[in-house]
Length: 438
Image 1 (tube, one colour):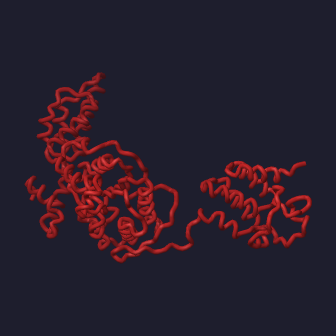
Image 2 (spheres, rainbow, N blue to C red; image 1 turned 45 degrees about the horizontal axis):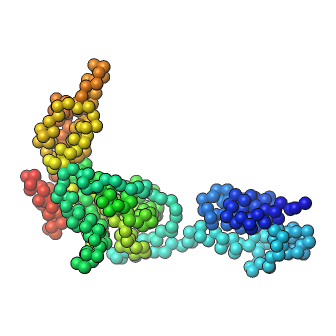
Image 3 (cartoon, one colour; image 1 turned 135 degrees about the horizontal axis):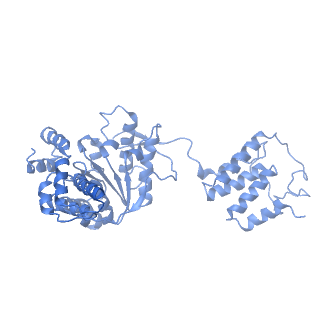
């Protein structure tokens, strides 16, 4: 009668890519007490599929069983269980050479096992990387777990209503050099560094970042504080490394950090070592000390750029800043039209609404339309018949919904008056003067 193990060994040799077959062979080897061979077969599967739970289970169970079994001394020919005649066969009927490395008393060739799974384990010690500012951070080992979603964007700058000055600035300082690298290089324009979008909350900074990704035809990865911050020491820095690595894998890609003042806040005013280490790791990744960032375009948005660590705004990092102002008249008309046309409407005077909503953010305008729609919906429920949203609904809503950017304007005024000696916020100061806020 043919030995099942011998038959399976021959089948595995003939079909080396069949993982299910190899796993069955490993199980039978483990059942037969040949734990070392079972681990080697399961290790081969793990090389092909590192997340295979069945193979990992066989390795664990066989290792435990081998450790618990008594030591086995040298066997004489005919007693090794590999064949009836003990002729030095491996169970497949084929002669095998003597092992190049000796096995231990548990019958497992641990050296061979280490080699078989070497690619699946992390380095025992982490190396240290040094930023240009002299800070040290851990060089994070690679893994396969994505931290953020990677997607393609279809929106373009043309989809952004109004804000022509902002779009022109983004196009001239960021998009055109990226689209024409040879010409940019001739004029000494480096394609390193990132773009920091700042301005009052709810004014479309995230939407602009998505539009930039669409213009570049790049993947889009959006990162928030919750994607990075971790309660365990060292994990936050690892998460920063992982999002950059994911962006490099999907290059060309736009890596967008939302609320940058929370992720990369000033280290001098932060007593938490976790936040300081996150900033250090950001510096390492943006400097490209250990990896090339070709094809990775780093964007960030913040309401408070004055709270972002100064090192992150130096050349080669977020060295370009663009003020995203509240929607101008054209933008307010486009935003209101977009939100209103999704609902039943009648007799809407858009120009009147545009005049009444000076100083409103994009989020305020959406809230205005939602509030008016709720009033029309309440009347419709009361009467039992759907009626459209009309101008009286919007005028009533304007009594309740007010511009929300007042606190930001106050903070911006203080910065423009007392903390702008470098001219970093001249664009913001100019806008404040136009709005008669300065």
